[in-house]
Every structure is written in structure tokens, then in C-alpha cells.
Length: 152
Image 1 (cartoon, rainbow, N blue to C red):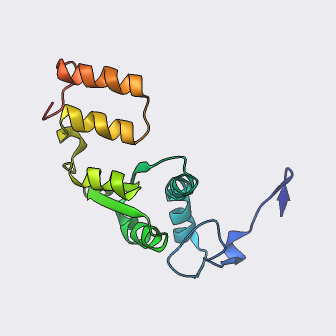
Image 2 (cartoon, rainbow, N blue to C red; image 1 turned 180 degrees about the horizontal axis):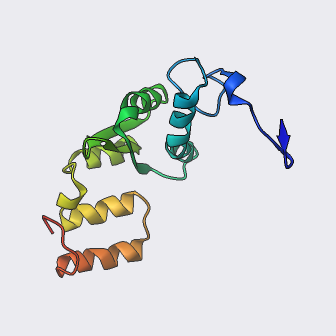
């Protein structure tokens, strides 16, 4: 079906090949409303993998719904991408993935971001590619107790 010059797929009658689909799923499936939601919910996660593989980023942090943890672990395992996952509540997880050297550093941190030391907070921001000057300003605010972290 063509709408305003854009091709649109009728998902209700489509069977995806998971190996060729731009969306990764653990196994072939018939697209239904649940799986369409999964693909939509994980769209940013999949884009982050693309960015990592293209060398745009060395470390990625993404917050996802905990119900997708098995799908996320399967995809990262299949791509042979190092990762660590921290539960941050009953429904959310923080997924760090990227270069093994960066993920190894993250493994030394507490899972709770608000419990990082000022130095860990600074290192994480730099590794995630945040603006260096803004990270320096943030670090100084934490050190001067303008921004409060539990360990800051």
C-alpha cells in the first residue's frame, strides 16, 4: 500500500524473516500486535547497536523495559557485543554495551547511578560520549555539593 509516496507494509499479513528484517527477534514469527509493540519499544536499542557497529560510540547506556531482557541478551550475544545489565526497578533495566574495555569499567560501578562517586559519574559521562566541558562543569558542581549524589 502506498500512502503519500511512502511504502507501508501491512503487518497483519506479513511474516518476517528474522535474519533479513531490520528488526531483530530471537526467532521467526508472525507479526502481531504484541511483537509490533516489541519492535517499536526496542527501536532505539537496535539503532544503538547500529551506531556501535559503525564505530560511532564505544559505550552505550539505554534504559529498557525489563520484560525485554531475554530479547536484549539474545541480540547482544548473537552480535558478540559485551554488555552488562542492571535492574533499576521492577519494570526497568539499564543496559550498558559496547567495547569490552568500557564495559569492564562499568562492571566496577554500583548499579545505582545516583550512588556513583563524583569521579565515577565523570568517567561514565565521558565514556558515553557526553560533552567534555559539560562533564567538567557537572563534576565540579558535584564536588562543591551543588549537585547531590549519595556518594558525591
